[in-house]
Length: 335
Image (cartoon, rainbow, N blue to C red; front, side, top):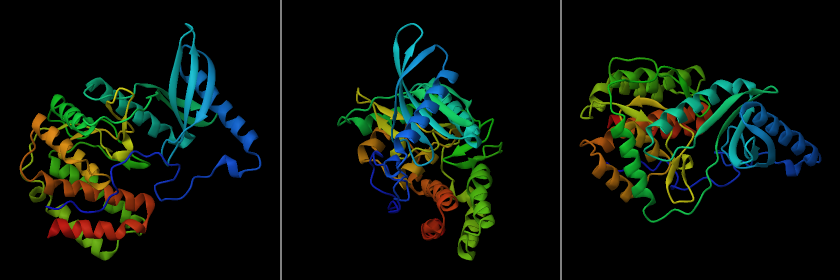
């Protein structure tokens, strides 16, 4: 099956634009820029000093690009033992604290699996009325020619080394700013039908974003989920859960680094759905993955179910601009 052209080319996110293409508000456009910047930097320093044990002083704080949801900073600190450390710090409203706690938990699970480079999570919490997440800073570098093959092998090893029978997770978490339900289910198709596609459809209906065509077709997909996902391998793996181009970095040693997870346990083919939507990897990624941990025949078709999940999530988060893509993807699955 031909991959739907629903995404953008695979590239690291380096711009200061939101995912909708609009420029972020800039301190440079504000007459009070120096004062506001100073207040924010002091707030970041207070957060690090309050959350990271062994920090003697904050040497420097610099705003960096970190996505469209939270503020992000590089923070250089001096530790109690005289050494220095570089941190990546994200800040948001106090209501975002649970999101950061879930992200830290997900990073910990992936870090413990240790098949790819995962930034070490350090701390999260609320300081001065704002939520904060502190993780290890990863210094970026150029991608070597083997980058995507290395990524494919590393992802395959993550999935292979964490094989089991569990589905979901012991807590709900977040896909971006959206709640992701990870409750128990007896089978993988029922989990996808209820907690992935079904949850997103109900949310879209509640928001008035799903027209009659989308409701009808997604309802049919939910009813046909056993057939649509037939042929996959039954064991489940630990999944990153939100693996798109913006969450894949390259460190100074040329190694793939994955960040911003929405982890749960599920069919590893689901991992490839997000890659298919926003920045399909080149052929050497898939070749290396399949050589390290072969996929079952028909996996390309089955990943289209997970593309629909992420499209519905974007519909719910960003509005009707994604409605046509959702309808097209649903119709393709039913064809």
